[in-house]
Length: 392
Image: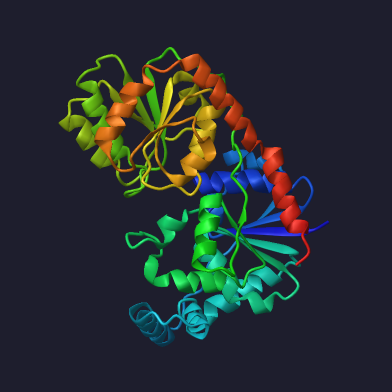
């Protein structure tokens, strides 16, 4: 039986990446020996989260050692020079990869991964994928896969909160060392290939990661939005601004926002500013998210960017029509089904909220359910298995 390792920053915390990783790991564990290697602290282990306790999965906990102070300073100096000068040569990228991932850390990660004879190692998220690329030569007989969850624009735009345009060439150089790189939509794969014609990532959509609850009846007059309250990502500030405009001419509909995070205070300030305390309600994350989908009538995705937009699939699996920012990923997932507004334009979103209240709800609900079926977990897992079994 093949031995698969998924290495991830965290698995025992709330988040879309964690949930997708857990679901794929559980499915792969039906046919493979699966280990999840995580930087979580052992004491926070909770295998009831994402029903991980229902699968035979092994967990390994790792923590990078402290690095030598002098060496760390030297590495920072070189890394800073690379960022400032941005030499576009592969050898410079390799030097930067090693300076930004010092030898103590490289040796530690290599040692931990070599404790078991893994046939395939999957680095979840761009930084861990790049780390795997840096130690590529230590695993000549192991398939190394990078699984990129952020969109191309989110990673490499000038405004990126993650990597930025100045390190794009470096990351692409490193990704090309891996046996496979998986992205979540064809739009991203096309952008990578357009940037470097010798690089063609594999596209595997994220699957529906939860068992749908009851299908919505479409009678509640409630909008729903779900996601982490991270900085300038999910656009819940835009949504509240839009709902304020919408509410000036509508006194019936309400908005439920389910999530937690650093921007919660900002959202509450906006709600108070517009006197929407009775109409815009913030709820904490829950394991029973299905009840919110069931009770909603329309789902709203206000994100400024998305790697995939898993909540769209979850919403449609409950029969919800969708209003979404005109993100490439949303267009790829839903095609002509969604009601789209211009990304970042809350005035346009307000108009689309009003439009959504007048749709033929039953017809659109049927369309939503049909689209959601394309993201069946068995179909997506089969694509992962083919990639794992593929000869290098």
